[in-house]
Image 1: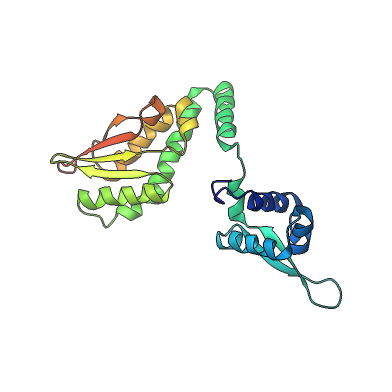
Image 2 (image 1 turned 90 degrees about the vertical axis):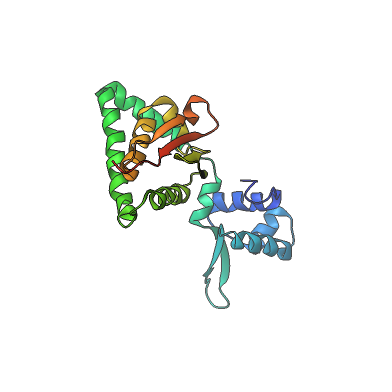
Length: 213
């Protein structure tokens, strides 16, 4: 969280107070943090610009309404999560109770869903160059850090992060079906030379420039 707010401890404390309280006024924050209302206002303005805080009016009887500050949905991403641990443990429970074949089914269903969602993007892409660049853009929008290069014979696609690394490290079906997704989308015999889950710095895919099969 500190990285997101540039290591500012006061803004971090504001976020934590809003997380615990739900909503607070500038005066509430000023009292709890021992900072002037003007100082609190400046911190809140910075957090508003980042999209992690907004405010709403709440009326108490007659007179001017009070403005209360709260976290946005975006701010929820700043706090620690255990999603990967939950997914890995759920898959382990499934394997123990239903067998390894069920794990394969889950990743196969995931592959089929992704193909249904992404194939439309490729429907008007006639040559491999456009398809490969479309795949790079899709991966980028899905949170992958991607680099695309080429030589005379191949396109070289490198992914420098894996959003499901903790899952893939224990369930290699994830990597196997990921490769199959790329093959099906590009209709090419894509080869994976390196894999992050095996300790490599990137997942490196080689896409031959031979005619579409």
